[in-house]
Length: 182
Image 1: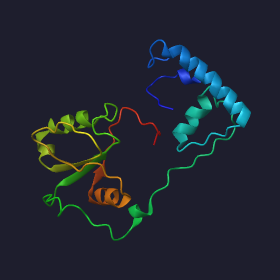
Image 2 (image 1 turned 60 degrees about the vertical axis):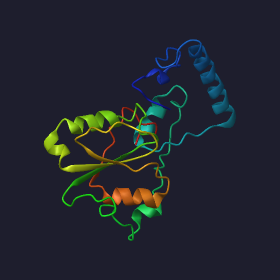
Image 3 (image 1 turned 90 degrees about the horizontal axis):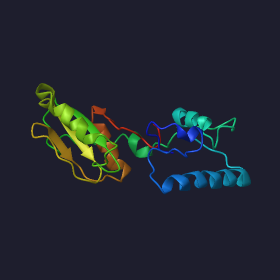
């Protein structure tokens, strides 16, 4: 389920503001297929957050389900390891600087809000001069000239991600929407 402010999932998706013709009619038929599948196989939805469970309860597909279990995503043991080193020295980040991190499936994904976030930081020169931004994920974006931002590339290994999180003072998620509702 991808939520972009549309509440049509509560009814039948026939007036989908995202899809264009001829896909709108396909969305309506797809919902009927999903309903038959749900009934035939007695599908039990599982949510990864309270927000997602609430959306499922509101949906036309799973609104009648009484109990939707919530199972949060698993945290990899690498994030809890004691021997994870800080990246500040390796990246030559001056001491005393605030380190903000931000990662995404794709840095240039228009729904992740990364360019807007960087532009907003750059508009406050006294703040921009005190921080370093660590960006990770595939894709290229334009970095404002007065901002110290480091592109770390795609980090798939949990230990690499743990190092970025260990180095960061704060992680920022300026997303316009998040698929998993965390």
